[in-house]
Length: 401
Image (cartoon, rainbow, N blue to C red; front, side):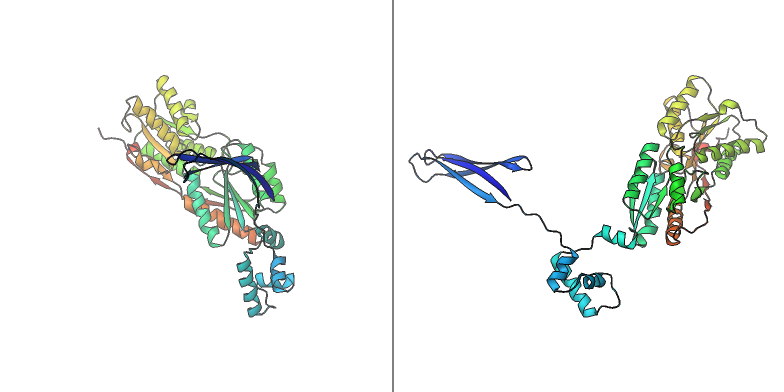
């Protein structure tokens, strides 16, 4: 109970004057001081000055959390009977169960989800940790993940590491503290040490990796055939007649970076074209990375005929710089990306890109995790390799002379 002391003064002048009544309430109620103002008119012409001090006692009410014991007390029955009604046990009559549920609803009782999780040893929650939300790839995968789990009655908790290993680890630990039943993870750019994840797997914690995976972890993985589609994307440029083809590669620590780079190299080998040492440039994954490297090439007068980029954002970054410097696409430099982002069809000219089945990646990862959860840790790790598709557009089509 909180007691508030306040004073107010009524000041009046002539009949036609408007008077302000200030009621100042002071007290230690969340550290606030509340001021109320009221306007009124005096009915008497005589000036009156009065000060009235009053004390009011105000009660603060806190909503009581209704427990299973409260429901049992209300119905004069045992806690175990109430529990059996909520868990729909066979040994309780329908009439009794209906009465208990109706009374509980009337009283505002709802089962404690944490307590239920501890009892059932599952939370019906799934964790998803991704590196970033800037590129649409990860949100689209998450849509596929949610599609599967929401139908099964699971909640999906989503966090992003902002390409930081420390953040990633904190996110994973936060998921553990929230008692998630399993985790779907795509590694950050900084993640080199996977010992923590090895320990999780050894303890039987369900974990599925997608897109950015590690060969050191013996668990389910979902990837696209990066090598194959990088090979086809590069070969498309070769068939178009481009000779000096550069590759804007991703960060060296990522497995898909290596696979796409190998596809680029082997496509050249198939056609007996030498890959020059400076034609593979470790770039990054963002638009700004593509811009930076393209500006360097133009400054050094080392402009290729075509560029196969590790993803769409780096290709689009290169495109921006080329256009800014008056170079034509594909007339001066042709471009091919990877991931088939929505931007690929919006830029001018439209960008040739390898489409990845993002929703299917999410759905596959979700199904693998669900199987792992339901098998109680007994599973054989598998890597699911999904197919892609090369969507050829104007950015890579060589113009006829």
